[in-house]
Figure 1 (cartoon, rainbow, N blue to C red):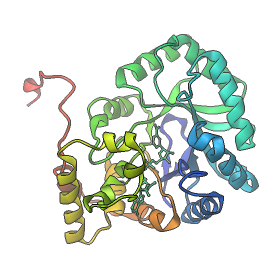
Figure 2 (figure 1 turned 60 degrees about the horizontal axis):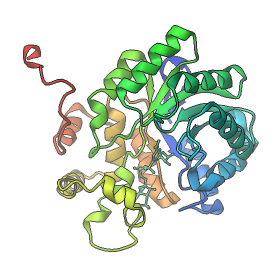
Figure 3 (figure 1 turned 90 degrees about the vertical axis):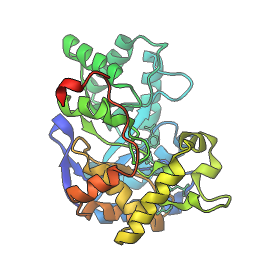
Length: 316
Ligand SMILES: NC(=O)c1ccc[n+]([C@@H]2O[C@H](COP(=O)([O-])OP(=O)(O)OC[C@H]3O[C@@H](n4cnc5c(N)ncnc54)[C@H](OP(=O)(O)O)[C@@H]3O)[C@@H](O)[C@H]2O)c1
């Protein structure tokens, strides 16, 4: 698989990252092992995880799977969605617990999973800096923060000589394009790597929810996902996308991931699958030859979000 540069770290990673949110949940340990092996065979060398995924089981399973080749892969994990939040104490405890579950002495990329307004930002950034100085964390990232929050933190990290965020992990797919307005331009300007999650809209862009039924997947099982993709225009947009794919001979899962990859600010999407059969068309995105015409045609299928400022007339 092609390698890409992880922002200003200069490190090289595979052009797809695999997200392990299914490990120990939708995928039992045996299926997780098959998914891991399929990813490694395809050339994936970064695995995304979080302290909260399936109550810590995802980290435990990932830790066992990487143990025989720890230095060949990069492990990302996250802190901040658990109830204890992002106080210094919570960050230190959660980092130790993640390291224990992963069975490793370092997390290559450690993200804040959410913005937590109850803790002052200086406390959060200094705790992260300490983890980096202690060698327990290599690089820092942030997920689900607004652009202004990231920008404030970057300014503070630079001014105070603290380890900075090198990676952001926004939600981004053909039906969730908010990141285009400020987050992706900020990343391009600041040399941040961008590893987007939900590239298929949690499965929506496979088209399977266009057919009536129950137990079709995550949207039937998780209210939060059903709500996230409940905008009234989404089913029609997905239908147009799936029809476009059929008419042009593309698998929707391949094309949806390839569309995310094609944004110039995107480094590598984080793909997800509950089994190897689902994974195959996502892996195919790595070799997909996107053209400017195809990219524009896909962009035209869904509404672009309004710009960040209403006064753009002079820019033409
Ligand atoms: N930072 C965050 O807040 C955050 C949030 C979410 C995810 N993530 C990370 O990003 C990773 C990927 O996110 P995601 O899982 O939401 O990605 P996604 O690619 O949008 O959705 C993946 C899901 O779509 C369905 N799917 C995949 N391939 C399919 C196929 N061929 N046919 C039909 N359905 C298919 C499966 O769910 P079903 O079988 O249930 O339909 C699969 O779990 C996660 O594992 C996690 O590491 C981070």
